[in-house]
Image 1 (cartoon, rainbow, N blue to C red):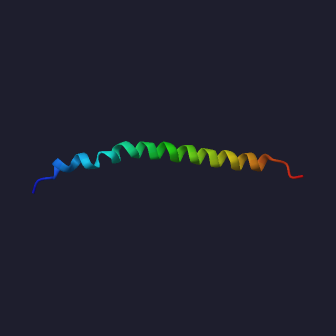
Image 2 (image 1 turned 180 degrees about the horizontal axis):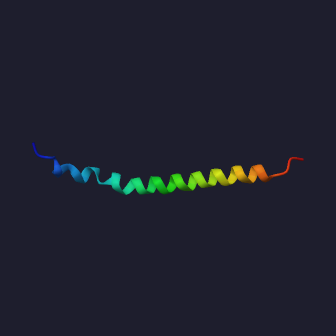
Image 3 (image 1 turned 120 degrees about the vertical axis):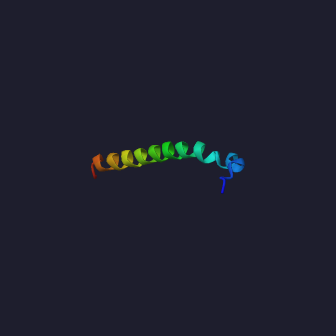
Length: 45
């Protein structure tokens, strides 16, 4: 049985979008963490 390499091009977008998703997740995670720490340092009046 041979691998269907002729159709590999249809799935190459996965290799391009995966790093983008990782970067976006990192930005969102750091933004949420920063907002939580800013809220924790905020004095309650």
